Amino acid sequence: MRMNLCKEYFYLKSLGVLLLGAAITSCSPSETATPAKSDKSGAVVLTGSNTIGEELAPRLIAEYKKDHPAATFQTEFKGTGYGVAAMLGGLSDIAAASRVLTTNEMELARTRNINCNDYTIGSYSVAVIVNLGNSVGNLTRDQVRDVFTGVIQNWKEVGGSDGPIHLYIRDPISGTHLGFRELAMENKPYGASMKTFPSYAAIVQEVAGDANGIGYSSIELSTKPNVKGVSIGGIAPTSAMVNQGQYPYARVLHLFTDKDKEAPAAHDFIQFVQSSTGQKLLDQLGFIPHS
Image (cartoon, rainbow, N blue to C red; front, side, top):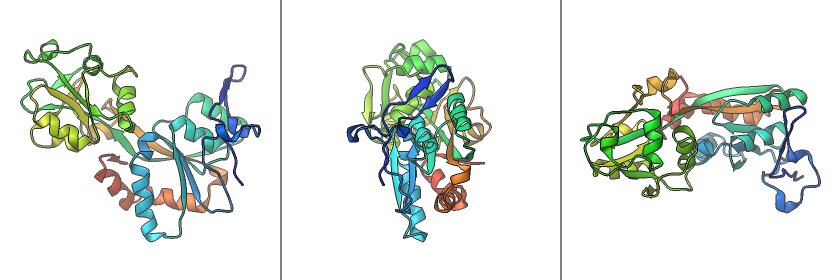
């Protein structure tokens, strides 16, 4: 049976509660956004964060299926709020999230008598990188925002040598393109002079060859030859600082389920993600494993 989730859901001011369009059966097929939640299919339905869904979830699923070839998954990644709404509406087994639940989401869960399991699986983090020869080794959060939005366009404005700043960023289809805007830029648009690349590795290569370049990458790649990770407000981009909650450009990643309705298959997959094998894969993909 295919159940529909409307693209729009509302806030009821009198309750301060998020309402799900998924519960409204009058939604037309053209308005559907989530995959079907089908008990008969046996598929684990996973919805939510682009940060998790862009590369991490597909790789984890592929690795999991090596030992569970009969396992099936349905996935849809259109943002954390989307995934949590689907899970609370009974349309998905697991909500992938790059943040904790909001007050409204917790209130919705309470009104529906839903107790949520919260599984921490690791952290997503982004290191700001510059050329190894650049004298700038520390920036404030305001300076990072202004550099990437194009307000600051010369290195001398942030204590460096006189020279134009060259911006290197991920392409718009990347979850990181938006993720960095949210983490570091107050959701403001990138400066007009930026150049986009399909991977962190490509950005690292470009910055390594450009004395005036600046970009971002995983913390792991920020240690590659001829680039360096910039400290933010004196906090170095390291796994230790991320796990201590000190580094600002990081998000803890969660998988949420309905405690009373958590399917055995969903639980088994989550256990795999938290296992040494799953955590090793997070590390390989540039995420910070759960400490």
